[in-house]
Length: 56
Image (cartoon, helix red, strand yellow):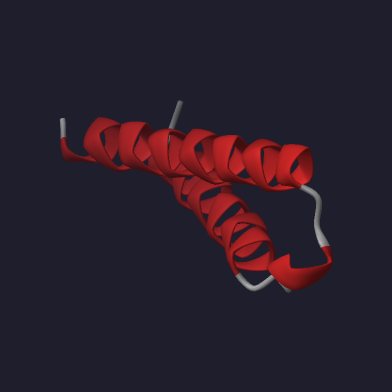
């Protein structure tokens, strides 16, 4: 993966992460909140992995 593609993917993941982090949780069920938390963790892991890959 080249640097340009990695930067593009990081931007996409950060935008998606922001959407999930800004959700109003008061209208969500417990299962929905758990699913969203898992998605947030997954996106953060992808961003971290791509960021580390860029440093190498």
